[in-house]
Image 1 (spheres, rainbow, N blue to C red):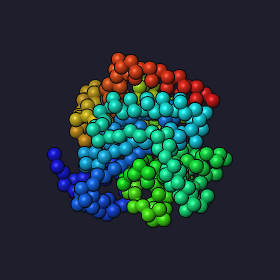
Image 2: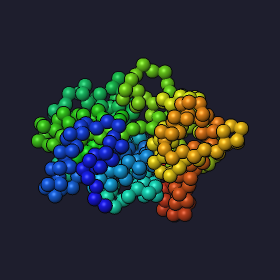
Image 3: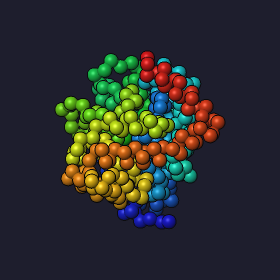
Image 4: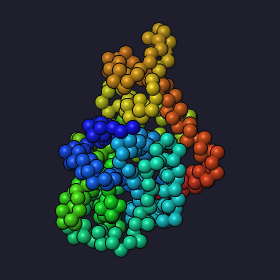
Length: 367
């Protein structure tokens, strides 16, 4: 089914919490259409261990919206980047297998793969022209500017960084131009390197990439005390693999889900920075037709919501409380994850990959 340009832009606005910028995005669609060329978006993933629900289900939701506009999507499995960031001791054989596991998850969570291509960074780096790009970007960037980009790999520019970690942002910037990608479709925590790419594009005689940054699901715990605001605060609040109870993972059991959701931060009537409501908005309401709350008549009886806005309004007014909401969230999350469990139990290759990743990840987080 053909959709209009305005409909395409509207869909991409649903994905992008920040888009730099809308007018350039509109012109990109018009120009590519007039010249009969494809538009490519990309996201890069460090294969750093277990894969949580934001990287799995939320990523699938966003990719399907993007490809519905006719944009093709490239997933970069950033194995060399993970090694540069000291993941799994820099062992590329382990990192590549973790990357294989990530792909297996995406294949199992209803992502439309007809418009998706998976690419390993270890294939890109075989080309000398890739390293020429890295060098040119380095020549056109100050050391301080590159250090400010280290947020993309979970570091701070004040951290003690190895030389390989300084190389990481330069490689990620080179990825954008080498793939090439018209749209950088990554989380808000990656925007600094997208901005670097836009800054150096002219000196490289390359078009400026569109930065389309999606929302990052916050962790399930109470938001940390911080004076940060805006994007920096959003980065601070995001879920973390280093704290397994801060996120639901794609192969969590029903007991895991119950434990994590039941103890999750969810203050009554509070709709801002409430992780349970975030799960409802960005995951459940995107994937189910209705959201049913089951409760005794003395507490208001059963109620069904068709939209997140209806649920949010009742929660804000105190008509819906955490003891009502959490059991429903547990039920729907379990339903959404169940196909993953079945796939990884029945498919021999998938099962073997998951067992491998579980073993090396548990070892990694103990180090």
